[in-house]
Image 1: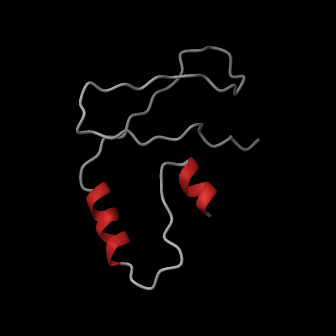
Image 2 (image 1 turned 90 degrees about the horizontal axis):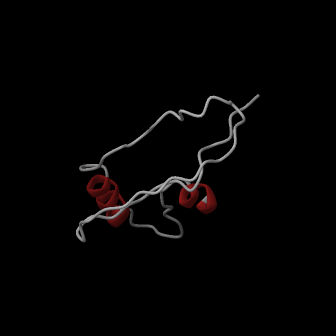
Length: 74
């Protein structure tokens, strides 16, 4: 569960009986965010991973992203 969450930009809450802190984090993180997506202009549908770069010029913003997208099912 932890690997899945971390690889998709999420987090896990384990071994706790009080979920208030985790719920506060969920509300805070999902109150303000941008979701950026794109379609590759590469004509060949070879399902290879492409490298992209995301950069900010603000110190008060955190980038959370997936390393790779889920593999398509054939």
